[in-house]
Every structure is written in structure tokens, then in C-alpha cells.
Length: 256
Image (cartoon, rainbow, N blue to C red):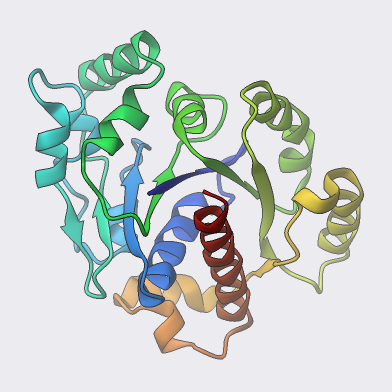
């Protein structure tokens, strides 16, 4: 099992959408995948086929007494293509605070809990996090094997990037960054990509996820985007990122 925390320092960068698509594409390549939502926005399930937002999930169960991880194992959903996911649920403020307490009291809580799920060796656990800095995002990064930073091609994402990089460096985690929602016809996006390439070097992945309005339309219709629009540039980009993650996983298994 390998755990990837998908993080960003701004809202609207597309973390949840990216987690959902990567989960589905990795599943289609034969990996066992669990997408875990640690974001109280509770949107992941809607991206993976739920008609309405889940009422129960990570945020409501993690605050309970007793064997939390056994209960979470029972709270898994499975999408139409077989992707397993645990949504956040409609957690109340007291439940969110209780989960925060668990994370702050036991820095290894998430890693130890995931190990108890007895997942197959070829499992990817993708963690959808709220915007950094947050308790959930910090905890996910500490407990992950790899951090995937999602950048938007805008000023806010660039301005807050240094703080996020320092936070990742402080916990000494391997990481890579991907730029999402790129519109190459906008000169600002092109300029930002040049700047990020110079700033991030080899940690900036070559896969730029292009902006495609068809993605939101597919979600609204309940369609699987990479199946309904297989020739989309965004789907091509996502397939490339999926191949990179799959190759990273295979290399880890050989090195281990």
C-alpha cells in the first residue's frame, strides 16, 4: 500500500476533481484504489457517482468512540467502475474538532489506521485534503508516502507556494507538483508555467492538466469523463499523470 496526499495552498485548484479522476484511471489500470476524503466540503462522493452528498463518512466516524477504523472500513462506497472511496460526510463542528484532537494527539493516527484496513499490496490510497495550511492537510502529509501538490496557474497559487514547499521539506517527504486547469491561450498561464518550471525544476511534472469545460458537464450528467471524452486534451494529460504514478509505484515495489 502506498499513500498519496493530494494538497494545494489555494482553493479552486481542483484537488477533489483530480483525486476522483486519478482514482478511476488507476483502477482502470488494475490498481486497487481507495480515495479518502479529509475535506469537510464533502464533494468527493459527488465526483464518484453519488447522487447526493454522503451523510456519513470519515468526518462523522473519526469522531466516534470505539474501533473507528473498523467502522470506516464498513463506510466504503464503490463507484460504478469499482473505485473504492470514503467520503467525508456531513460532520458537525463538534465532530470536526474531535477529529482534530485525534490528529494532534497522535501524529501517526492516520497511517496506523490505514494499515489496519489490511489492503492489498497494490493499493493506492489517495487522500483528498482541505486547503493548506489546515490540521487535516498537515496530518495527511505527515502520514503519506508521497505528496502531490496541485497548483493553479494564478498569482495566489504562486504566492503561497513557498510556504507549502517549506512545510513539505520540514517533514522530509518526497513530492511532485502538477499544474491544473491550464489554458494555453492565456499569456498569463504561459508566463506562470515558465516561472514555475524555473522555480520547481524536476519536482514540476511535465503533465499540464488542460482546462476543459466538458469535465464539469460530464459531472453534471453523471458521466465518466475519460470515457465520454477519450480524445480530450485534459484526458490525455490525466492519463499521462496516471502513467507516471503507476511507474512510481512499480519502482517503489522494486526498490522495496
